[in-house]
Image (cartoon, rainbow, N blue to C red; front, side, top):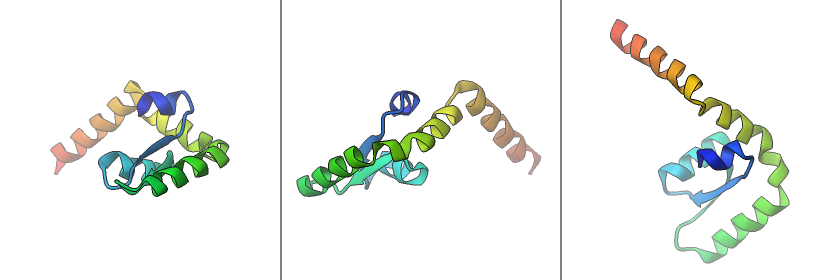
Length: 84
C-alpha cells in the first residue's frame, strides 16, 4: 500500500478491513464490500473515472509514511506516554 501511494497509484480494498479503513480515512482510493463482485466492479469503474482526484491524498499519505516522518511521530507519541 505504501508503495502504491508513493508512486501515485490509487488503491482498491475491502471496506471491512484495516486496509479499507485506511483507504477511506485518507482518501487513497475506493473500497468495496467483500464477496460482492458488483461492488468491486463499481469501485474499479469509479477509480478509473476519478483517478486524478486521489493524487493529493496519495502524495500526503506517502510523505507521512517516510521513515523520518514516522520516526518523529513515534518519538512524539513515546514522549507523550512517558510524561503521563
